[in-house]
Every structure is written in C-alpha cells, then in structure tokens.
Image 1 (cartoon, rainbow, N blue to C red):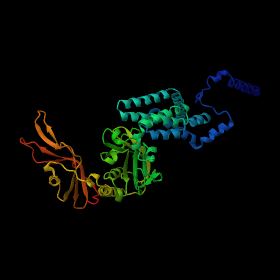
Image 2 (image 1 turned 90 degrees about the horizontal axis):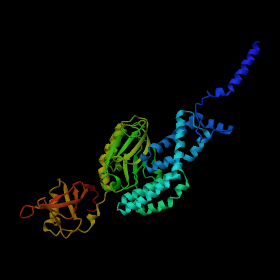
Image 3 (image 1 turned 90 degrees about the vertical axis):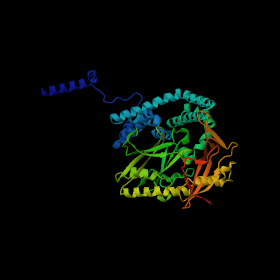
Length: 492
C-alpha cells in the first residue's frame, strides 16, 4: 500500500511541474533584450562561461559601459582626442556582437552596462542613417555664412567642429557609408576655410595628432622637435618630469583672458566635476605662449635647465605632501571653463624625500631666471639701424638721459630705438572741454639697458610724454609698463 501511495505522489508531482499552471509562477530573474542573441549551442555556452572566468567579461562590460555612459551624458566635456580614443577602445559594433554571443554578464550592474552599450549602438546607428547628413550640411553652410559676415574665427571653429564630428563618426563606426559620403565636401570646406589657420596652430604633425592631450616626458620638450619615444605615463620621484598641453587653437583666439590653470586630480579624489582639485595657475601673457597653441610646464625639472620660474614650486607644493607610495594623477588644463587638454600619469613616491623635492623646486626657481635669459636673444630692433625723432628734445643722448634718471643704481641705458617714424611725431590730447592737457610721441620706443652682472634687459613699448603748461610743453618724460625682460646681451 505504501508503494502504491509513493507511486501516485511521484506521478502527481510530474503532472504538476509539466502543467501550464506552474508556468505562471516561473518568474525569470533576468530578461534578455530582444536584440541580444542567446547562446543556443554548447560551444557558445562554453565560451560564455570561460570568458567570465575570474570576472573578466563582467569587467569588460563595466569598462565599455562607462565609455558608453560618458558618450551619453558627458560628450560636451570630452576633448576630441579623448572622444576618438574612447570610441576606438569601445569598438562599438564588435562589442555589441560580443554581448549578443556572451550575454549581459552576471550582475545587475553589468546588465545595465550592456544595455547602455546596446542603446548607444542603436541610437547612433539611427543618427548616422538620418539626421547626421543634415547636421553636417548645416555646419558647412554656416561656416561659409560666417566667413561672408567677416566672422572668420567662428567660421574656422564651425569647420573644425564639422570635421571633428565626421572623425568621431568614423571612429565609432569605421567605414560607415553615411559618414564617408559627406567627408569629401566637408574636407574641402575645412581645407579652404580653416587650413591656413591650423597650419599656424600645429607646431608639428605630432602636435596635430595629440591636440587636446597633455603628454609627459622625462626630458625637456621642444615643440616641433618632439621625439615620440620621450613621452611616458609612469615616473618615480627620482625622475625629471616635464609636460606639454597641446591645444587645437592659438590661445589668444579662444581664451577669454590670458590666464589658465592646471587642475590636478590625485587618485580620483576630486570627482568628475573636478571640484576640490589641486590647482596651479599660470599667466599666458608672454609671446611664446599667448600666440601659440601649446603650453609647457616643468613638474620636477632639472634645476640647471629650468626655464619657468614658478612651475616647479607650484607642483612641489602639491606633490610633496603625498604619501610615499604610487599615485595616479589626472591633469586638466583649463581656462574659466573650457578644457584645453587633459592627460594622466602615475608617480611612484616610494622612499622619496619631500624636503629634497621642495629644495630642488626652490633651486629651479632661482636658476630659471638666468636660464631663460641665456635662451632669450635680443629683439631685432636693437640690431637694426637707429631711427630718430626730429624733435631736438628727443635726440638719442637726451632720450637715454631721461630714461637713465628712472633706473636703479647699477643699470645703464645702452640704446633707445624708435619703433616707427610718423610725419606727426606728437599726438595732442585734450580734455572734455577741448583744452589741451598733454602730448605723447606717436611712435613707441624700445629701450635696452645693461646691469653690472653683464645681463641685458629690454622694454618694447614705451613712449614719451610732455605736459601742457599754458604757454607750451614741459620737459619730456618716459611712460611705459616697466615689465623688463632679461636677455642675453649678445655683442652689446
């Protein structure tokens, strides 16, 4: 009898588990999206299991999902070179295929990452198949319209944006016919409107290929003569470290003021918005920076070769307070919002001496003035034939005497060069009532002096002024910014 009951129980259970009723409660914990291929053979299943050994596939999905998420939410914050690098790493088409074979990973987070990747592929496929051509043609027309209105720099930037969008599209979907179709006309527009400008921006092909990046080197960087092998991403405290930020335009053309700063994110402590990052500010008011598209900073320089007075001290202040271990450092070069360039390097401070780092920085600062002067030649105006004013009050000897009276002891005027000659040597100024107040020389003058240590110093934009005293003008005096530049005297 007991055997009969057991037999009936087994038969009943079998019928229950095969009935439609139970299927109502057979809730699936993970729903595979309709566009994801489910492994349907033993080989694919084995490949899926093997690929996630030690969490490898899960980590892959997480990393690729982060890139897809950045493209979704942070596109405007990314430099063009960063976008291109990320797109190539994402390898969107192949990554989506891999998800189709290997699934959504083993956690809720990896499933979310996979969905972000698949969403990006679907969204961008639709965009490049439709609206993309319209957007490119609109930018092309806008660029020529801006040129016609005399807004040449805006025309150049519009043409550059158009080229950037095409390059990004081809990085995301290599060979996409919808992107390649518009490229010839876009290239023609860019070359016509922006080509001459960017020929001035790029200091080298290396600069062009790395615009938007900060690169790091263990030896001084010479723009136009970069050696790709000199750049690295890992250093120790015993290394010399230099860096260069490559912009995609000349600084004076797109920065609102002649100031920028390095924001330093150490071990990801200050978050994506860079609030709370360490900062090192720098003025861009000297010609070699303000009129170029790159900026060099000296992080841990050789003091005997240092050229920038404040850089090493600024960096040492940030780095010397770190713990003696390996740190990952993200660096952003920005100006009141716009990000010019970004880069990262690892710095192993094991066994380092903060005292030595700060002492080297002080030494670099003190030596930089003379090191820079050695490499600063006299402006050509001081090697050219002298021009002179007609006014007898401004002969060479009298101008030198006027300026000599303003100098500290130990400095001697060597030459005063008139920069231009005008028929009207003086420009008269009047107040709001039409009464003459004073007059200034129409031309500026350049002044060269020498100190007792044999160094020369120069100013390029001074002028003379005379105050009106009722019946005539008083004695001339010199007016200028007095930002003397120290330089090599040459044969002077």
